[in-house]
Length: 211
Length: 211
Length: 211
Image 1 (cartoon, chains in turn yellow, blue, red):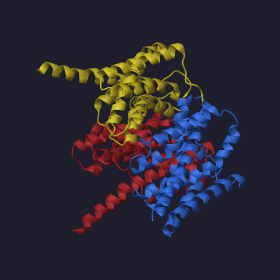
Image 2 (cartoon, chains in turn brown, yellow, green; image 1 turned 180 degrees about the horizontal axis):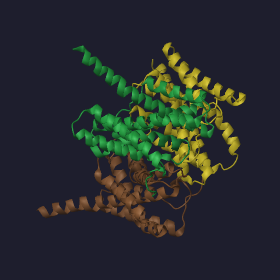
Image 3 (cartoon, helix red, strand yellow; image 1 turned 90 degrees about the vertical axis):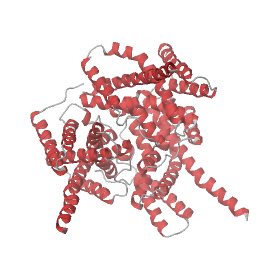
Image 4 (cartoon, chains in turn red, purple, blue; image 1 turned 180 degrees about the vertical axis):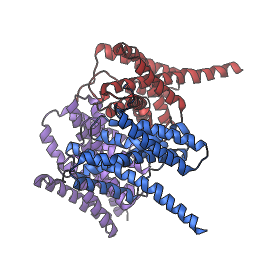
């Protein structure tokens, strides 16, 4: 009966992890692109790429009081450095490039929210705060990169639904988890929900009300 | 002899805690009001409200190396959300509203300083650093909200005495504590001192010298 | 045989510690000088001085998950307060003053990088991340002060080599450490290397490429 085990390994290592690492890579590219706005050099791009990719999860882990997850992880560093190199080499078609990042970013958003929720629940955080920590994991990296590069964070300004979409996806994930269904199915449903809500929000121009 | 015990319960839960929670609520309102300056949406207001109310204490707890105090606290979340709703609904009379916040803010300032000192002393911080941690608890939430919303922090600029007042109140509290008097009386004296110093500073335009 | 022991004490306390404390003092002065740009008061100068001097090491310790190193250290506080007083009194000749800080800053940069590497290696960080933590120790204090005072961090912008020089010095230190030579000699070589690279970078206008 080794076949199913191999399948499980395949699924665990490939499906969830690869999607998460793709999400991190896309976040790192978004961060490196931000560095262009202020005549930063490639070191600055690396700092913004790392902050965007790992800032949200780092803040979550510090607040929960657990070990941060990227220390000693060479793959994390490799992804960030690759993102900086790609942004450095691909100097044109920024708008087109951004458009192609939209879907991958939305998938990463859903994955990070759920991964953040799972990590929080596993470390004594209750369901309501776990959803908040999930949203933070997914969105505060970009917030941090905006703060570092001296912008009012796009995340907090009136515009496309972004954190709200994570909040909805995360809440649905918690509710589905209570039904004791298949975990992978729950994740799949929530990631699809997040991607759909992102598309609808962009397409129909749905905003949160201004304060 | 149950009567005195009930009184103690009443005092412990009602006097100190209620004043602290009122302080948190006022800080959250101040944070939500800041979100208006940059066309932020209600999510942005929530982030700034939370940062203002809990940012100082969170930074203190991270630096001391202890569990942060708001995780899993539904009341904390309720206060922040209520503050955002109130700011959202009360759209006018900002100046008048701010004026009425002055006293509550000053009382909160005194209470947070002392609560921060007590929490620091209880976790191995010496008296001098405990006063600094108390000042940080009371003032760095607003500093953090200013950083997030891309302002030079008002706390650091020449203007009304704010951190200085906490520093004086906190130092007096440490000195009174050495006299082994009644703890509640010490707290009361220091909060009154902080409120008076805030009024005098605003009234007489007393500033720290510019660097 | 007490003589050699005394020499060791002398070396350990005087050579390394005094240079580190001079480095901290110079960093604090740089931070206090930044406070002038925004009409900050002496409290604001103190916050920026402390952030510049201890911000990088604090961030490193939080990320590694160990106790921060300045809590309860009166000397740390004394150095920061002295730096603020000196900046407050010496109101002129800023350019000349800055020039004289260049060498001390470069020496501090090398020392902080190596001290950060040693502290990271001693706490389970691998060699690659230890170099990154060393660079962070040496450079993120200034980054933090720039963020607090609402500037795009100079560290991330195209300009003189600064973090890069720490990265090179730190990498050489790790390679020398593998050779099992004398630790003090390794440190001396790396600090001299950092200072030389800083001078060459300033003199020959060597930059990292813009992203």
